[in-house]
Every structure is written in C-alpha cells, then in structure tokens.
Length: 402
Image (tube, rainbow, N blue to C red; front, side, top):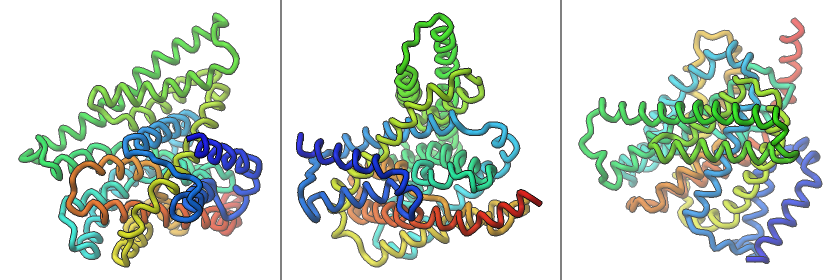
C-alpha cells in the first residue's frame, strides 16, 4: 500500500512542477496520468499494483465527478449562459437523444454478438461528455465564450440526464422491477430522478449559501476552510439526491449553478481550494484507471470494438451535434468544433463500473468497448485541443473584431 501511495504521490508532485508546460503542449493531464498508470502498472513495469475493487473505483470516480460538476457550474458565466441558452438546450434535447440512437445503430452493425440491452447500455454510457477532460478548451480565453459555456453546460447536464437511462437499461438487463413498464411509466421515473436532483441541488445550496454568509458576517469561518465547505457541499448535494432517488450528478451541477446565481460575495475565494481538489481527484482517477483497469480489458479489444470506439468519437457524436444546430447562427466551423470536443471520461467510467456486477453475458466486450472509447478520447481530444484552438483562433479574432 505504501509503495503504491509513494509512487502516486511522487508522480503527482512531478507533474505539478511541470503542469503549466504540459498544458501548453499537445499533452494533457489525463493523457499523462492514464499513460503513467498503465506503464507503471502490471502490464509493463509492475511497480504500481493497485488491488482496487470496482466499488472503490466507483467511489473515487463519483467523488471526483461530483466536485468537478459543482465547481464548474459555480464558476460558470451565467450571463453568457443566458445569452446562449438555446445552444446547450439543442445539444441536450436533440443532440443527446440522437447520439444514443446513433450509438445503438452503430453497435447493432459492428457488435452483432451482443444483446440489444447490452448495445443500448454502451450507447447510453458513452453519450455523456466530460467537462474535466475538455478543460483545456473550456478555460482557454482564445475560444469564444459562447462556445466554452455551451460545452461546459452541456457536459454538466448530459451525464445527469443519462443516469436514469442507464439505470433503467440496467434494470431491464438484470430483470428487476422495471420489467413490463410502459413508456409513460418509464418517462415518469426519468422525470422524477431529474426533478429530485434539481430540487436537492437548489434547496441544499440555498441553505448552505445562507449559512456561509452568516458565518462570514460573524467571523466564524476560519481561513482555509472555505474550500472544505465547498467540497462538503458538493458531496452533500450528491449523496442526499442519491438517497432520495434522484440524480446526484444533476444535484451537484444544479447546486453549483444555484451558488453562482445567488452571487455569494466570497464565491471565487471559496471555490479556489475546491477546484484544486477536484483537479487532484481527477488525475488520481486517471492514474488508477490506467494502472488498475486498462491491462485487464486488453484481451477483449478487437477490431469491431476499435471501429465502434472511433465511430463513437466521430460520426456518432458529431452528426447529432451538426443536426441539432441547424438553423442557428453558429458558423459551420464552430459546429464542427462543438461536435468534435465531446470527450468521454469520468461519467463513462462511473457508468461502466455500475454495470460490472449486472451479470451481462458479454460484459468483457461491453467494458472493453467503453474503456477503448475513453482511452481513444483521452488521446484524440487531449492531443488535438491546443492545436485546434490555435488553428481557429485567428478566425475567431477576426469575427470578434468585425
């Protein structure tokens, strides 16, 4: 245990020392940590041996995603979101369902040995995008603010929307009480899960914001504890929503938006420590994914799996985005940009872990397809982010000046 802890700690320290230089290159944190975990893990050097169970990995990934969703929403530019609300709405209400349908059709063509529910699960699990993995884009001031906030808001909500879909499909797969439900009942369940998440996020954050304002006014909030309070608030939103039968991820993102909308006077100072913690959790998740997961699914990687992964990152994502933005003011080049930057990451990891114990007959192929898509996304989106932004920045400057 201590050897593993020492290796991860030293790796993280060295990366912290060169993080700014890495972020200016074609690499990214997830690429470095996932690759580092794989190289140090049992598949290559064998010095990082993480005997981690699915439930432990799930807890780590869920905690990471909860913090990232909360802090991203809390620091978003709400004024810009209001001005461009139509874009993320189109991506969520039109693009996301089309992505799932197209992913299902691609699976039927390329993965015929799998069952219908298994293919549907793959499509739903790989539909949500990852705000953290797309961070080099959404924080780059060269990218127009409208595009950045659109990607951020979409990635914040689409994983929460996919949660009830994945759970329902998982119920069908294992033969739970969801069997025999009609479409109307299924829709009600989905709406309830989303609604509970929204309500918990707003109510819990509103109460917490009042308490924080009072603590600051009375001088009771000690220096350095603001970040801890934000992390605790994110976890409270997530856990309470899950307990009540809602989506914890939607609760976290909604809670962040609520804190943002309430305009807490010390919001940015409070969030600073929480954002750093979220970044640290994210990178640890990636090194654990590289060392503890990738080598185990290597035997299930086949040409059809690779082909599906490539389609998932290109046609399956980009075509729905282009169709959903028809008739908008967004130039074609920017639509392609929005379509391409739909990276898969933490949400897909969490969903992939959720189905491990479902007893699916072809669980190896299902998990391999999910993991292969995530790995290709880490590489493709990480390596292309800065070069693509640099390539389009000149045109964006002309538009801004014009």
